[in-house]
Image (cartoon, rainbow, N blue to C red; front, side, top):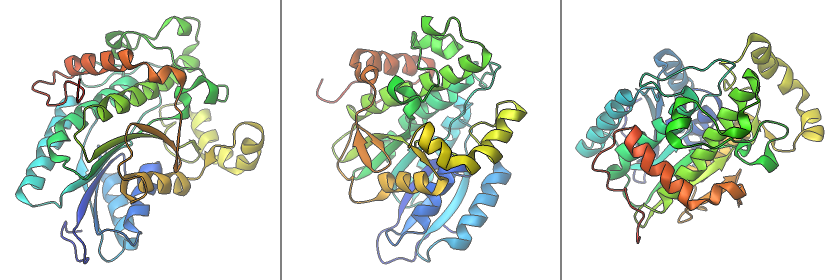
Length: 336
């Protein structure tokens, strides 16, 4: 669909990474089906065919004032992130897109039992879930003018009190995490547990990043982290073995009531968590709230470990080096 808008209000752009499936698609559907706006949604994904299919599906049900398109973005390639950032910024500057209102950092991977690497040699879980989004946000900072929002999809797995039996994060030095080397608590992990722990650790990085970003943003631009809960039926387990993928896709969604009773009550559908993500990105209610961690539509405490400011600042500084980011206007927290 065209990037122009026919609504009575001023059109605004929302970029959703990984918006062609899972809660990213649910978020896009909720925004495009809302009475607010008008909104122009950009589905940013590396899979062109799935993105086209998602755009076609979303366009059929979008409100009359809303528009949607797909743009190519591979978070496993820093070159692709820079290309996407430059193209989007150029279109925003020329008026080819409505002003950028929200950047939803949603795409993510959960490792299987083998270690894979990005195009730049980083361990994929940390490279995609954190470094790719870190660079993307920094590439678009100049385009995020008040009022604007950044929403980073984190996970309750970053909190040992919320892991529901999954391995807790095992933080390490940032260059080590980028290589795929976790902290000492992961020393005895088997391949499956090690992959799960890399995911939890990357989600802790997402929370650190959000808090550090919020300290750097100008007035009127906000950053918040979002925990979607356990969402069944997504493609997050696509890198796991066939039995795990089968269970995640076909078995677990059928036993949701039992899982809520015996595992955790924080189990949601794609529509529920995607809708809450859309609310955090576009609704008037959370306007002005920044540096918080949301579960669904409620700001809650993140893990005790996630409030380590020195570690968050170290993550920021090392991420600047790892992504070879130069001339960042956000290298220092505001007021410090």
